[in-house]
Amino acid sequence: MKAGNWFARSLAATGLALMVGACNGAKQPTSAASGGTDTIVLNHFTLIDGTGAQPVGDAALIMKDGRISWVGRSADLKMPDGAAVEDLTGKFVMPGIIDNHVHLAEVDGLDQNTKYYTADNIRNQLRLYAAYGVTTVQSLGTDQDLTIDIRDAERKGRPKMARIYAARLGVVYDHGYGGLPGLPQRVDTPDEARKLVDEQKAKGADLIKLWMDDEFGTLPTLMPYSISTAAIDEAHKDGLKAVAHVFYLNNAKELVREGIDGFAHEIRDKPIDAALIDAMKKHGTWQMAATLSREASFTYTKLPFLDDPFFSRGVTPAVLEELKSDARQKKLAAAPNFSKYQSVFDNAMANFAREAKAGIRYGMGTDSGPSGRFPGYFAHWELALMVKDGLTPLQALTAATGSNAEFLGAKDIGTIAPGKWADLLVLDADPVADIRNTRAIDEVFIAGNKVPTIWQTCVGRPADACKSSEHQPT
Ligand SMILES: [Zn+2]
Image (cartoon, rainbow, N blue to C red):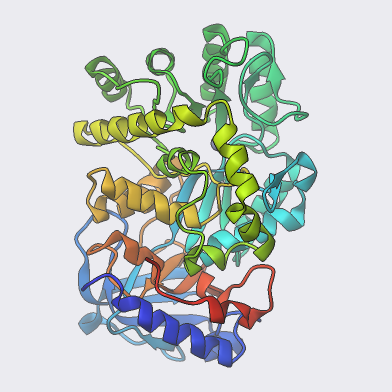
């Protein structure tokens, strides 16, 4: 199928949805909405199950009370009594996307400030992720109790927004890079690092994050290895994985030696070498998130997708106006590090390609959430960049689903199999044929709940205001 065919269909679907008043909530299958048995059958779709297996045509699945109870060939389907049935002929069903590197509620529009860390803002961002088919996010190191409370409430029920995994507060060296100003996460000594790690564990962290960077040498010093060693060791003693923001190849080699479980960014100062590859293989270190979309975004003064409705539906008109403004472009072009970002991005692309070819385990993560890095949209951009970097679309999709769940240790998401939560993305076109078809979102399910998609969303405007801005992206 040629890219673009799905678009006309999704426009038609969106038009219809708007006419019947979507944006008040997604359409619900009748029996689920009317209470009683909550069984939904999806039938006659092509299955992409998240394990990396080749797609299976004419598949079916049953979800009951939010979990997948059966999946297989449509011909083998035993239709349960009272089920709501959706005929998905011509459509594709994959697990919901997992973004393994985000930050929650750091911004309002483009303004970044810790005062925006509110429950409402967290929930709104989780709904936006969900609208883009990102049904789980891992928030890396700038969270406090609110995030953990919302996560715990979600885990007790059947959420209607993206699920959370969280590092809570990551470890920042007092004179180094990382975290957010004002958050109690800065340490000076190995003992303080251990104490901070233990506190995160006690307060519910799913993993531990640390930062080792100096912002192109503009900060006084990098986190000393005595502190990273202590943080990683303490995380492991607490039964948690530790992941690192890295930039420099030398640091990456040391962190692997110290037992880091994953990198939350690519190495970006220079091309990686065989020594790092060998060490990562030996230690089972993951390239958990390459954040290619993050690095790409820094190379633009004006992002190349501002007129794409798949993007603009997810931001307010005021944000869009600011992103397009001459003032912003002048400011970004004048930033002292702007000229460095192209080579940083090129290094990230080259290094990720080399790792993937060498058989290093990798996931998918964007580092979206800070100002100018947009929840949900960036996950689709990341997938496209991974494919541009040499992965097959199926490999990129597997990274963002089954592999990411494996890294999280999340046994009930990431693949489509009996017992897993029904966190599903229904697409109008084949993402294995063209990765850009992940944008052809027809339906999103989280724990069997149908949630509004981005094509039923129009942030900061009345529900029908986005209709006139529809057009095919260039
Ligand atoms: Zn980050």
